[in-house]
View (tube, rainbow, N blue to C red):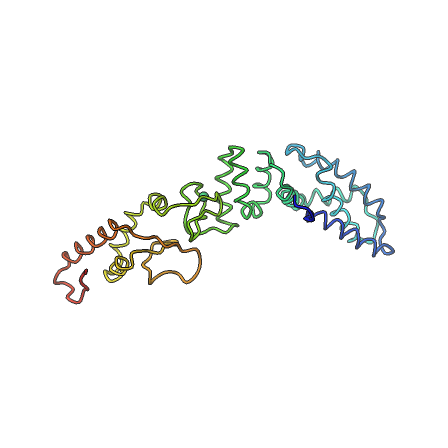
Length: 275
Ligand SMILES: [Zn+2]
């Protein structure tokens, strides 16, 4: 971890401590009591919540527990007992799990498979946003099944782009053809093969007005977001990607266009001619 960058929960714990010092006269649970309750609860919670199964020890959660016990003590006028704090934390264990997941992520330590599963299961929003990092961890752990869940969470909570990466399968290809998740630098050729570009063009030519097909042929590119579009129909914002047409692809489009025009010959006198 870089110097000067403290874990958020450490900062929280310190701020809570400062707040408590200032508010000392009003509080009925002393700093010593909060410390001793937190220490005891850190041990008990590891067992009670099965956190030992993801390799955690009391010392790993003591800052988090201290911070929660501190706020529980602050929020009541009567003295906080260990049992009351235990009950409250167990009842809100999903929140505790989310905080633990975030601290596992920010620790920068390599994750175990169990920890990766834990983050995906209990902090899906965080996992979705951190998918690029978690993807690399999952690849290192050869956890293909977890990669599948990460793809879905990235699409739901991350920053998905319209175009799926041929290498990692995440919707994460940006306009400069790099993948946000796996970092691949793609070529247009690789992307075209993945998209089955020839048949996409064919479909496009059969449903667009011939004038728009001509526009594509003369511009020499299409714009790709959730669909393939002629340049004039490019979306104003977002992650649309420009894909250039090869000479063969342009000729194929011209061929389709003249085939269509010869079929409708005479039916549409105003139809533009392919040049
Ligand atoms: Zn990728």
